[in-house]
Image (tube, rainbow, N blue to C red; front, side, top):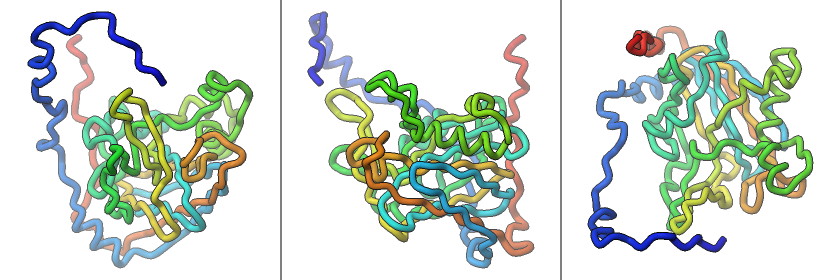
Length: 287
């Protein structure tokens, strides 16, 4: 894509203005620190209680009780997944991708937390293991497990190329939630929200600032594991782009299933842990 030439000449102090040092918007020194050592110690004696296989180009819903663990596994080949999370008892409280990104950065790994929407704004899950933590950021600025992409959806697909493609992650998640709630798709759709792109390798181009994707480094045996801070309802879509090496809304890309495993801690393994309360702001908004 050709860059649009600027309409205005730079001022004499342009270099000085550009040289101003950045300031972190949300310093996180005051955030409660997750007790990763406790979570990992409890995980050692946890037992597997169930598993859910998510077929290619589809989505499945799953429940995770507070204090339990869920693991998203690569089982057959490189595949990315789009994750939604809600409070099991109140779908209005859901994963807030934008605030999670603002607090932890564009890509997540161990000790980063999934934060919920306003007015709740609390950690609802914590990442405890990530077999791709070795990847870091590559020479293109790419990394894995992003909270910058919004999920592939049929509306953008229709806008850019036309047609009615029904296996975008947005539609996959909508179908799965509608089936779980036993309601029409139009009633489930408003609950679908921006995602954690599990295993997806993404970034922004340095010249145009555009969102890019590249082949995921995930391989069978890799996984991303979470600790549920509250009772969770989750939905995971296996992206129709497979490893997203070429396109993300496709009937021709090679796709694979993903496996979700749930683990229950032993009694008293988490005796020093408690669920995080909802945000303490009084919600008066100065009125």
